[in-house]
Length: 79
Length: 243
Image (tube, rainbow over all chains, first blue to last red; front, top):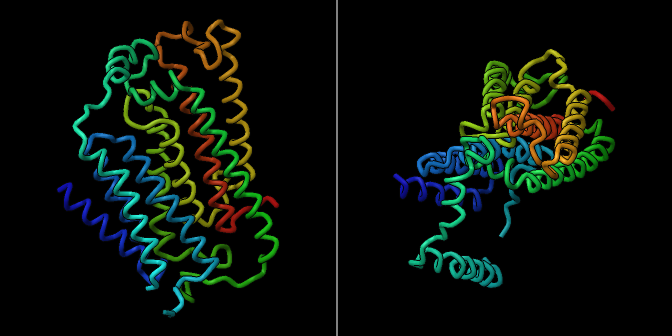
């Protein structure tokens, strides 16, 4: 279960790095936060899990989406 | 991909590995002295069952004041940038995620789906945030965590409801923020006058609940964190009513 969650986190992180659509990257980051919150709960650190879920999946996603809305969503097709 | 980028990535991976791998491979046992001391004394010293709360509001309350100051400075900086930005692009048409028939004049981020989910979820999340904040001394959580959850709830309410309530008014929220920081400083220095030192517990003998000062600090910090993050996010979404 730990290995599964950690490998999912790794895969989502790589996806967030290489995705051309920044909104997809933000959703992947949010999913990473949820998975790490799950991991923290399994490792018996519930207060860290609460913080991770609230900050990572809640507030930072709002801030990222706001930033994308005011810049540009898609990467330029180059290289 | 260019060779320069490849070299950069390889160097980064190598550096991270050289930092992490020795920790994972070492057999050296973790230091246990502080842990054992806290397990034994934290509850009787501060009255908090949650040892994390006992550390950051009992033993190391000074660090908590520093963290609150860091948050204050960062929110102040963000607001300064946002206010300037709002003046420049106030009438600029921005890209919206909502579909064309769903567009509202009040907030372009608002769609029917967001409205329905956020307005129903907001009050429940708000209640949970206050629960986490108020019971920080006996259950996992505390001022910071509860405050962030309260902030999410206020953002939900700001996104979901069309009614202009006092809870989503940035003027009211920033007043609560300033007041709670004032109360935090007052609470920190009040211990000096009761012979318990800076951040000492001035109300230890008032009630039978020995964690009362931690509860007070949790409420103050929770209000401070919650309102400051909420003000920041509401101002970002263009919903500030004051200036």
